[in-house]
Amino acid sequence: MEALDDSKIVELYLGRSEAAICRTSEKYGNRLRSLSYGIVGDRQTAEECENDTYMEAWNAIPPHEPRGYLYAFLARITRHISLNCCRNRSRLKRSAFLCELSAEMEQCIPAPDDVESRMDDMALSQAINGFLSSLSEEKRNLFLRRYWYLDSIACIAGRFAISESKVKTTLFRCRSQLREYLEKEGYTI
Image (cartoon, rainbow, N blue to C red; front, side, top):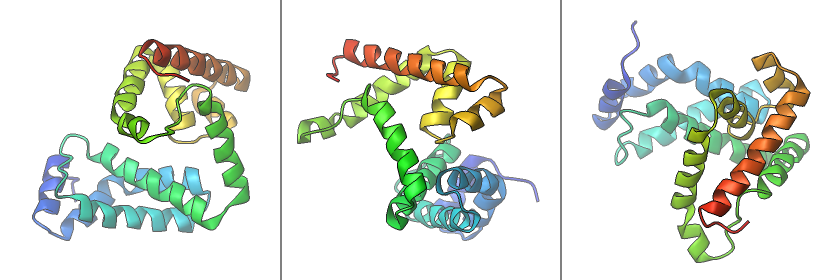
């Protein structure tokens, strides 16, 4: 069975057809499960997160209609569910890893400390996207693998066939550049 394009899959969701979930699973199931597994570190839990993603997508479409960005829409849901799963299950090793990543990013992203800051999240998101688009493809990929997909330094080094030292140095420099970029955009770190 040939995979449908994203627009047709979204139409199935809008029509409340259960085939939407089957088609989504056929097209993106492996990628979503892999994303979740990278976060939760357990195959069975990753499968549960994948299934929860389909349920949340079912409930979110409509009102959302992610025709041109269905995978990104689903990946965001999967990532959120997987991170919540880690928090809920109090996985000490994974929690320590998430704390390590949070500490790295705290140095360059302002933490919301009041209502106004929370309302500014969309502008911050746009600023971060602007920063990412200014990076070379390699740097952007390293940054996203570390801070979006939560890959370890060793995993990133293996994936891109570079040394762990180069990964660490590149990420350090990217974080410094992000801090400077956000300060120029008017954010106080």
